[in-house]
Length: 175
Image 1: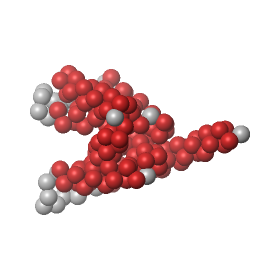
Image 2: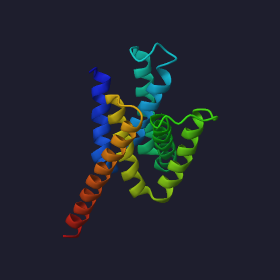
Image 3: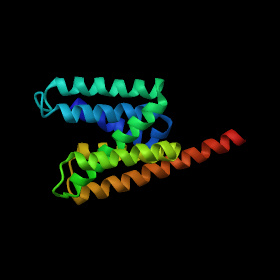
């Protein structure tokens, strides 16, 4: 396993279990993954350092946006996370259709942005768990229905874990 895979798995696990507390990490990691994924086929493949550098730049830009311009970051982060998860699930289910690959990304992105704006805290909790699960499962390589099942199972575990820790925090604050 290379260092990029290890770092992505760690970032995915942090998002999966603690993402609600680190909205900037959701935007930053999602920016990195999308920047890296989009750059790899065009600039030397996954072994090149260029996709990593472009991913890091996109991730840092996303994280800074989340910290300094949260309202914009909510929309951008929701769009990127929703688009990434939707397009990954469509590929995982091996759905082939007469529409281009960007259509599921766009649909998921719009839904993610709308959900994140309306239901910020719960949407962050769910999106971080799903994005974290998608990153972790994607790094281990199962494809098809198995990858979708594993993402769903991990995401549910992440949502339950984060929701329980959210409840404990409220009890501590009240007590």
